[in-house]
Length: 70
Image 1 (cartoon, rainbow, N blue to C red):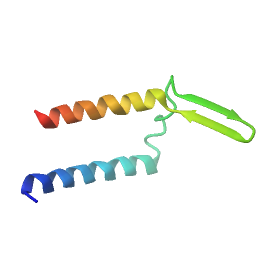
Image 2: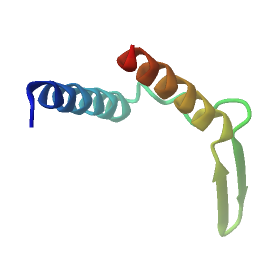
Image 3: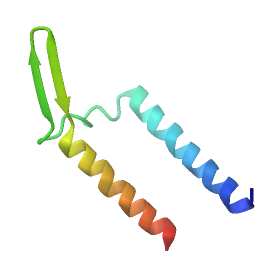
């Protein structure tokens, strides 16, 4: 494995750790409650489809990968 691949693994791992810390502390409480996220709760059944949240994740990851490739 070369040096660039090792550095990339460190950066990705650090990013995952930061997102994990934000989730544990509650700083991402708004995520999943955006307008457009579908939530149906009935007695005995819960259906949750995070449409808007996943679109946001897709846009952010696409921008990050675009920046990395440049």
